[in-house]
Image 1: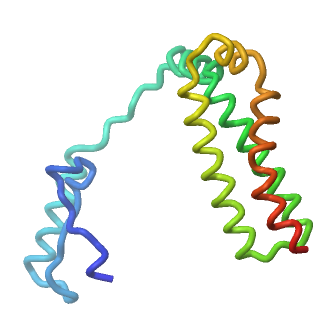
Image 2: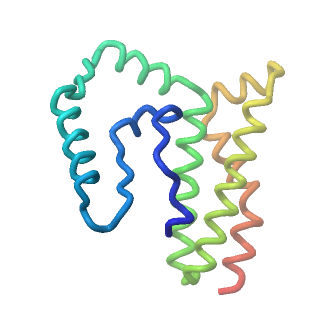
Length: 153
């Protein structure tokens, strides 16, 4: 496990400024002193609470909710969720469910990227005026993926 963990780097990650590296499993005088100094520093410099700006938060929510890609992403997530529920009801194994989920999510990412790239007026009108159409097109694109799993059962 030691090979997988990185040492704290407070210069790179400010939230790691209150980290310690103890050099032994036993608590030496030096280790105790480090812990004491860290606790003293934390008590002397409490974290300041952030003030929430409710008005700004609500404005951000409105912007996010009106964003076409955000709406499409939410719609596609619902579609994937429903598809996964149907697949589970058909008796797909956990490993098949995992692979199906990965494929559908990959398809969603690609679909949203294509949607993002569309710029001509016809497509822009289509995108802005019909999340139902977006879901329908996505469902058509994913039908082949789903069928290859459902046809096995």
